[in-house]
Length: 48
Image 1 (tube, one colour):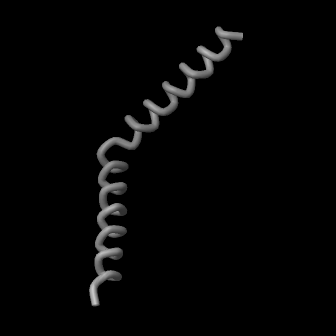
Image 2 (image 1 turned 60 degrees about the vertical axis):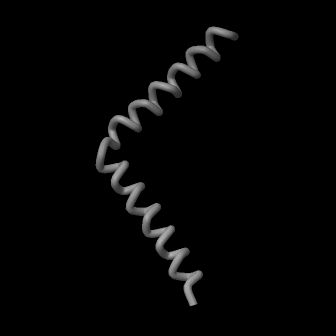
Image 3 (image 1 turned 180 degrees about the vertical axis):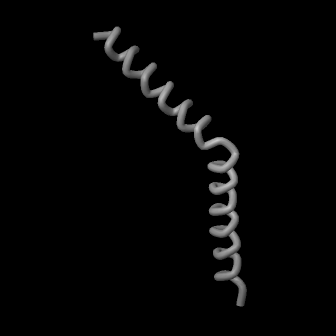
């Protein structure tokens, strides 16, 4: 049972690492752009 849990945890970890590496700079730039647009939209909504 413990071996199965360790194997599943290792598999999930490898998948998450692969996704992070596969996205690379393009994924990070997209996330930053999206976050910047969200923040600027919120600030615009607060302005009178």
